[in-house]
Image (cartoon, rainbow, N blue to C red):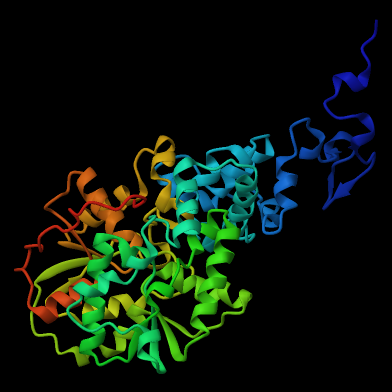
Length: 452
């Protein structure tokens, strides 16, 4: 029985196009020399159309724009310790991986480095939250992340700490910390403290240091105290839009009861929320990160103690790439007597991620099976390579993450992790060390339940 020609060819005859007579720039390319085949698109395969499902989501559209150049993979922090990147996700989804219930969904930290280099604008900061929101609705959520969601909704913070203790950190500051409700007047700065700075043992130390600095500068500030709830931007990026909206509506309502000129934030994630997300819900406030406030005021502090420390600085993704602030933290560090600033290879717009963004703060356990080491551990190794005594940070997620990483990488006693506010406070209070002698390693405090 003769074999039909169509079954021999990989493309049906009617899909083959060639011109019998064709000459281009004096060269005869007639017949099969100019043969063209119609594109065999992905829709012709029998795999589930997960890509189409993602593209149909509000926020997921740009995944379909990927044309596989691979530029994103080289800068993806997760790929450096694993096998990841938008290009790889696109290809996996294209060939049938169900991202809605796959571990790959939770590995992205929304650090934005891929979008920085993508020529097509494939935006994982919109794609991942959109897919995660559907996964949350379907109940496909890692247990530790679900705990953070439940704690936030029930207690107003992801650590599960009592709301009545939210302002207890102020008792150890050594300076008055006014609560705006009790103050009963307009202030210049309404300080939105956030959860980890209010509850976490190491977060509280940096918060108390900043309170002393603000007082030394004569700043007119106050806090919301027990009226403040989690800003919840990380929960939004992890797919819990409902929790984010509930927290945002509460915070906006609480803040609008009082008169103030600017919102001061400690947390870059809060900075991002107040600039980009809260206005969508009716809460538009002039917002400033604490390093932006302090940078032009450092000379007024009159710091006298030289710390004698070599310091390297980690750029928070949500202060740097997301919102373009790289200089203010460095200006603060460079103004501290006896601080020698040395940069890591990955810094500024190509800074490496700590792993805490996009819900990563609560996903170390679930994600550990898919990476050779935590992003924070990789970053600590890069900091140690600079010969620095101190890894300086200005995001409350990072102190605890990096201190854990210092221990797990065997660098305890070699590198200290300190918030910029703590370094400034050390110089003000005369708690320095000699050159090459790092201050005592901090971070031995036991974490509250729900911490990272």
